[in-house]
Amino acid sequence: MVADKSKKAKIEEENVEQLDTELVLSIEKLQEIQDDLEKINEKASDEVLEVEQKYNVIRKPVYDKRNEIIKAIPDFWLTAFLSHPALGELLTEEDQKIFKYLSSLDVEDAKDVKSGYSITFYFNPNPFFEDGKLTKTFTFLEEGTTKITATPIKWKEGKGLSNGANHEKNGNKRGLPEESFFTWFSDAQNKEDVEVEMHDEVVILYCFLHFFVRATPSLAQLEL
Image 1: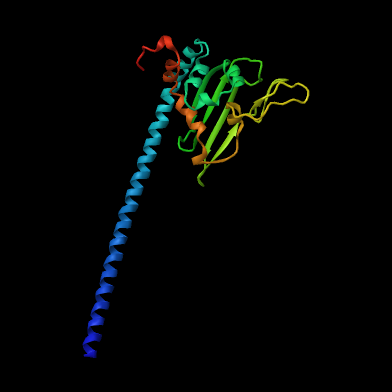
Image 2 (image 1 turned 90 degrees about the vertical axis):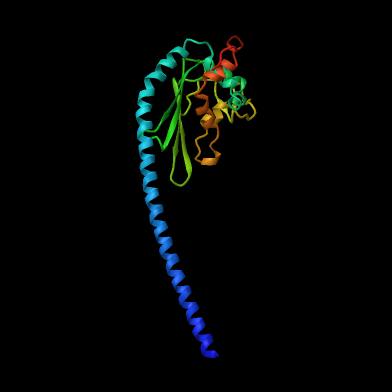
């Protein structure tokens, strides 16, 4: 009786070993297939990026032509920003005064497309700062954070933003801290990807025509 039990246990052990061996072989084959799929996906991603790089070059003169038309429309960018559901809330009264001088806006991918992009705001000569353009750059890092750099704004004498509040220098008085477009622009601290929200809204605004038309009653009949 004991011998029968021992024989049965040995058979079961051999069956388990056989099953384990078959399972290991199956998993190894699945891993090989997964590796092949990843290689295909990597190749597909590379080819998509190549196509995007090609069409970024083709789009550039079209964007330039578009910007030339926009420059002839008074307060185009101010109107578009104010019509945007998120960015409109960000513009303070002082920001709106400055945005009357905003002449064009460019969003440009990094050369390899996937590593980030920059947003450049072009301003006509104005009484607020010396800069003709302000650029904010977002670089996506491997560890999952976004490196952010921004042009230091050269405010003119008596002008500036302190913690988001405008302060025309008048003795020691300063405005209270206030969130604004320029506090967002000047914030150059690295962010977790999930925290980088406002720059995505600016990129969405690059499809700006909808926002401008929506805010202009005389154009309400246009279907865009």
